[in-house]
Amino acid sequence: MPVHNTDIADIFEQIADFLEIQGENPFRIRAYRNAAHSVSGLGTELKEMVAAGEDLTRLPGIGKELAAKIHEILDTGTAKALIKLQQRIPKTVIEMLKLPNLGPKRVRILFRELKIKNLPQLAKAARKGRIRALEGFGQKTEKAILDAIDTRAQKEKRFKIVTVKPTVDSLLDYLKKVPGVNTVAVAGSYRRCRETVGDLDILVTARQKSPVMRRFLEYDAIDRILASGTTRTSVILRSGLQVDVRLVQPASFGAALQYFTGSQDHNIAIRRLGQQRGLKINEYGVYRFEKQVAGRTEASVYQTLDLPLIPPELRENRGEIKAAAESRLPQLIELKDIKGDLHIHTLASDGRNSLAEMALAAKRQGLKYIAITEHSDRLKVAGGLDPPRLIQQIDEIERLNDNLKGIQILKGLEVEILKDGTLDLSDSELARLDLVVGTVHSHFNLPLEKQTERILRAMDQPYFSMLAHPTGRLIDERDPYQVDLTRIIHKARERGCFLELNSNPKRLDLTDIYCQMAKAEGVLISINSDAHSIDAYNDLVFGVGQARRGWLEKNDVLNTRSLAQLRKLLKQTMG
Image (tube, rainbow, N blue to C red; front, side):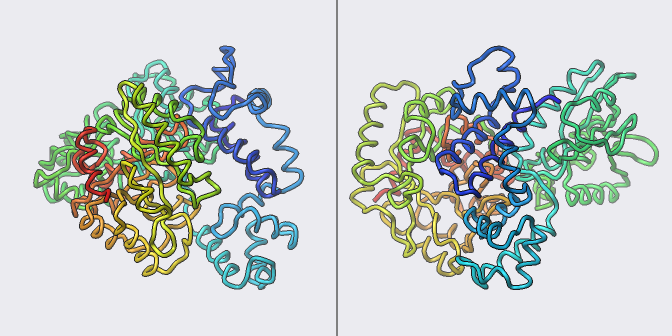
């Protein structure tokens, strides 16, 4: 069975998880995680690179050992290293790592001390009060574990958009090559740029007798077939993702695309508008009595209601229909509008590429400027910079700027917001920078009022340009810390500083709702990649998708400005 990049990345992530539970060397664990990130972000399938005889060690984060494992996985579908680890620790133990409050050390204790091998056993032990007696746990942690298990059981299984994108790209490319196929389009929550996706809906138009449905069933990543017919086929992929392919008539394609894109609330509101006009709107078209009056294009569906085409990202029934009727739809930001990236890491802290490599990769991406923002000294685990190392990097940036053409590097720092709201470095140390990015990486469990006051005090510091990943969430891994973002947004407006929309698809922080709130307050948002490697610039597309869901336009976004305009705005935040 053919192996795709996502399969290889998944195996590397599993190996890293097992090693972490065993307490292995953290550098070895990080190497596997870095390799998984590098592989999943590639635009080319590794099987094609190997077939062409390309040297895999030229890929970021891939040395000889990992390159050999990639060859092994492509040949066998797995890795001996993973098999050996699975023999020592059941795979179900890994599921415990996905719960908040359970890091590798605690999972290791649960496995060794209580012989807990899966979530049901963990829940049973928690209900019997057996966990609180373990070293490093306690009654509060035991309750938090049980609550997290209950919450997890209630959640619909969803996939991060970044894990679904390679599948979408592969499937669309595969189906477009089937003889007789004319149009292929993805719908659903993926098209609306939701941060997670439950399943995939793909619509196809084709000439009569096209073998598209039969060929879809031959797609190499299918695990099992749920339904198979002439107009709809539904399968489960090896990843667990459900994919439905629908063959629709050209005269109904626009109506079907509108219907299956959703959301349900948006579609209900659209159908009600149609009913008020004597129209019936469904996936087959718009009908007046028995006559179809629209449906070939999405625009034609909305035109029957005297509405312009509403962008997919806005279709959540949050005022977009009223705005469309009043000609107030925003001109949503596009990826091409982004001129720079203001949150980037290099080898100097926890990044994987050099300063020059990050700058040149940004230039290739079409960016005009970047800000290098290593972690500050307090975050030792990420190689944070102390004052002497910060000065050293400032000098290096200035030297590189003298020699680079077509890209400018700004001097920044991702500074830790301490528990009392002060910043990790002094004003005199921050004064040489072009911008200061404040972040919370500790004390996530403070009560709402204390956490909010902590961040507000930080924003009041003389040198504070931007609040990065403002809620600290990791999608499906860590809940946002308690913070009153309404007050944070008001403070940003008063202080004249900015908020980040972190494009890392594990974060996508701010959410769309708070983007809308910031826009209403006139607070500029910076869409940043938080890049730790040259490949991570590709994540900007996810940030732009989130921004579009938040109704953001070009002028609402800080890093759509020219370098001269940006410098002027940043200067106002620095002292």
